Amino acid sequence: MLTHLTVEENLRAGAYTRKDGNIKRDLDMIYDYFPPLKELRNQVSGYLSGGEQQMLVIGRGLMAKPKLMLLDEASLGLGPLVVKEIFEIVKKINLEENTSVFLVEQNALAALSIAEFGYVIENGRIVLDGPAAKLRENKDVQEFYMGLSELGKRKSYREVKHYRRRKRWLG
Image (cartoon, rainbow, N blue to C red; front, side, top):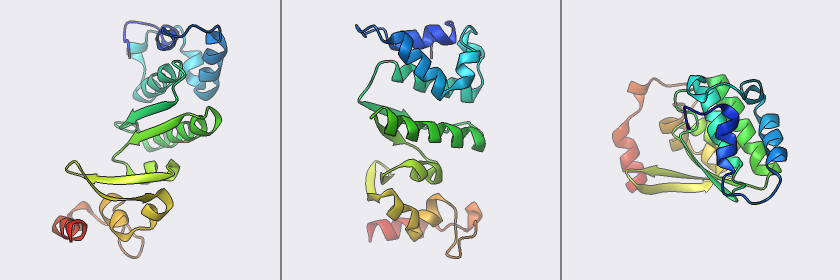
């Protein structure tokens, strides 16, 4: 995010390399996906909240008309309701704009709620992969990444046995 520029200037910067005349249409598309940005379009972006900044970053990326968008920790520092809203919009963008999204995320529950396929990576190594629905049902993923016990109840962080995880993945 270019903090000294306004919201709209940031969005237009995302379309800098484009040669077509559809920038105004795509600005309207971004404002449809992220209505708060339309209201804030003349505000300096350095003063936006965390959720608004995340919306702006995603919007600026979309202005380049990518075929593939990489989102790294899109939920970092955001409240649960904002995370839910942003992830729903990311899923909508994937479907409506035909843009593939590669999401790197520690919030497994949120990521697997919108993903089609997922990878579990530990220490730079893929230890599990498969369709998102299958990963959501995996007992190890539920325990170690969603904090759920075998009965579907939340566990405290201290109850999760890290040594069991390493043994399961490697064994």
